[in-house]
Amino acid sequence: MQRASGEASVEMIAKAGRTHLADLWQSGSAKAMLPRIHGPDPEVVFLNTAGGLTGGDTLRYALDLGPGARAVATTQTAERAYTAGGPGGGRASMQVRLTLGPGAHADWLPQETILYNGAALSRRTRADLAPGASVLMAEMLVLGRAAMGEAVAELALSDRREVWRGAVPVLVDPFALTGASLSLPGTGPRPALLAGARAVAMLALVANGAEDAAGPLRSALAGLEDAEAAVSGWDGRCLVRMRAADGLPMKRAVARALHILRGGASLPRVWQI
Amino acid sequence: MAEAALAPDSALMTLVQWLSPAFPVGGYAYSHGLEWAISAGLVADAAGLQGWLADVIAHGSGRSDAVLLALALAPGADHAALAAYAGALAPAKERLTETLEQGRAFTLATNALLCADHPPAPLPVAVGRAAAGLGLPVERVLALYLHSFASSLVQGAVRFVPLGQTEGQQVLAALHPVISRIANWAATAGLDDLGSAGFGSDMAAMAHEGMEVRIFRT
Image 1 (cartoon, each protein chain N blue to C red):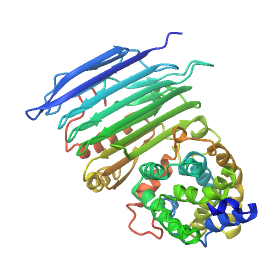
Image 2 (image 1 turned 90 degrees about the vertical axis):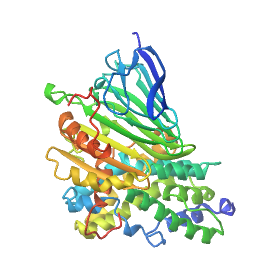
Image 3 (image 1 turned 180 degrees about the vertical axis):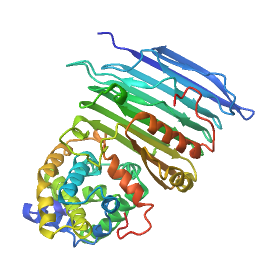
Image 4 (image 1 turned 45 degrees about the vertical axis):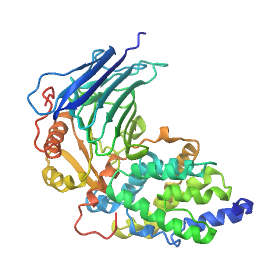
């Protein structure tokens, strides 16, 4: 069976206070586009033209920002991790690399990843920050599609986010999910894990003073009716975790949190919400 | 190190002493988010406590700590790098406090007993670094560490769910199989094997940060 592979890499630099494209490289099923936008910071939109990930596929996205550059990066659509494809199907592998020069800032705001029953995905998202650089990451995962009545019982997901400053790890978030850690008929709700939620989101801001966002976020996310959120902030980090019954209420809650974390900036235009 | 020559029982007694509630690490002050989970009604009885702890050990922070401890026990381990990685793994402010404060207290106490001069490190790294010289099987150190972790949380829960002392001990006994399983698995695991589904447990630790009235520090 043909395995898809793709790699897209975008390099941007700041000139006279604005960020410009310096280089764009793409191969295989990965593409990167820079739609014309009206905000102050450019938007980079990555796309997997294979239409999803299955066993053995590899996908790499990279964004490199020069000193003082600022950009928002997202994905054209929700990513889909399909059934790995039987014995020997292997895992799909996805790598996202953000390399941020001194004083640069990136918002990594991909649309949600939908995990189908039997999906096997290993994803690594790593941001390397030079002094004074900062990053905002938001990752959303949805188990199957509730509207289609899909239930996910088998899964092998390893989804790790890492933020480094030079040789020092700042934040490591190794989310993992297998059939053994899902809430299934007979296992009870498992409140220490997903508690039966079909959608989860993890947001992380790593920036000087990021902890100051925790208070406003707690207020903004208090009393959500169809999603549950928790916030923690300390020492240049602010983290948000959310659980919801399905993708849409989670995405709305994420949008609310991003509004606070991004000073009211509008969401990437490709976001479907 | 001198401990390498200790007789097996002596090494085991040393480790049991370090991991006992009487060792001045202050584990009783930390609930690992369980205080919030109890106040929110997520853990309301012995079965709920057992399920919560089994999931934390098998799929959450217990599993991650076991991996860090195994790596810290390995010959030639880079404890400074592991300490930095363990700190970055903290999923919430209070989790960092919990592992750093207990790790600092553990290091001070074992430094004094071993005439060592180790810098403070997160708890699993500090325990691994000190226990490396005992020559005990890795699985055994991991199992006793996870048992001590579970025992401390059960003690806290007994007071605040509340549960009877016997019920608490039944919960702890019922956790032995999952503790053994994770200890055996983590003994040969590496950093790439780290992975947590302990989303609700992490959210509980985050939510505890915003609690106005609390008994535990975490």
